[in-house]
Amino acid sequence: MPSHHRRTRTHSSGRIRVVEEETEEDSDLAKKSKIMVFKSMMSSTKLFVLVLLCMQNTMFTVLRRYSQGVLKEIYSKYEVLLVGELIKFVYSAYKISSELSQGEKAVPKLRYLLKRSSKMAVLACIYGAMNILSFVALRNISAGMFTVFAQLKILTTATCSSVMLNRSYSMTKWRALISLMMGVLLFSEPIWNRDDNSKNPEGGNVMLGTAAVLIEVTLSGFASIYFEKVIKTDPEQLGIWERNYQLAFGSIPIYVMFMFWEDGGVAGYFGGWSVVAGILALLGAAGGMLVALSIKHGDSILKTLATTGAIVLSAALDHYLLGGPLTNIMCIAGVIVVISICNYTFDMSPPEAPLQTEPKTDKPDEEIALTKASVKF
Image (cartoon, rainbow, N blue to C red):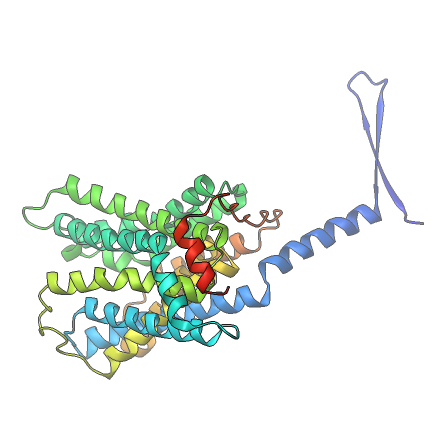
């Protein structure tokens, strides 16, 4: 028989006594519930993907710093992004083709996916708009001011998640996200606290620049949650490779446009390329795939935590390998970032219920019906 722990409480009148009993079974159930919450957060696949994403972001940042800060390479960043999208497009097509069931043909399947890629095209356009807004912002406000506003992406992502996915976060998680934002802001102190970065560009419009960066961080949060909503609730329930294939298809013309917009950069079209630039393109392609996997097996907030942790890790590697800055303030901020990530991750509030797939329409359009007649799914 389980033992009982008895607690008594006397009413203010002194006449009524309320007796509360708590059994060891209740205590065991509470402990088991906490263990289940912890296991759901730390599932092997989710943790593995998030660690990979953090390492990819770290390697990409340090290698780009080495390429442009040490080697002084002058290739166009849009060309690197374009090549990364081409790699992702080709590799995703290969994975889709290799996973077809017997009797299915690759070309009709790939053609069908391109016809149904409108949702990913919207996401690609949002990413393109964010690039333009960043350009406008940096033409009108200082790099330090831009860096400060950019940290709001953490909160805009959480807010969009609450609004678009009807998620509720505990006060512990909100406090963790706010302290994370402040920690990253302090960690970037060498950027926004430099004299040459605190001056607004001559002739710049501060109101326009501020509006541009605020819209950009809002779109960043919206894009993350929009991507998660499509992956998890779309009636078609396409796989990660299929979504990456669609997104790369929509992104390629965007980066081609940017490449022509800057007229090939300083070195001209595809000039100044090196082995390091090629590796950066590969890492960029891998990053796009890992982002989709992290959202599939986790959520957009966990993805943000992984990329934020990469900021601290990449700065430490940059200091020890390339002689980058690592001040006392940065060290303290790094500790704040790590503690904030742990506070969010190990919060024992009950997890949210999984997102439900939206029901399909009763009358599918003629195009889907004809395509599914020729392509087996």
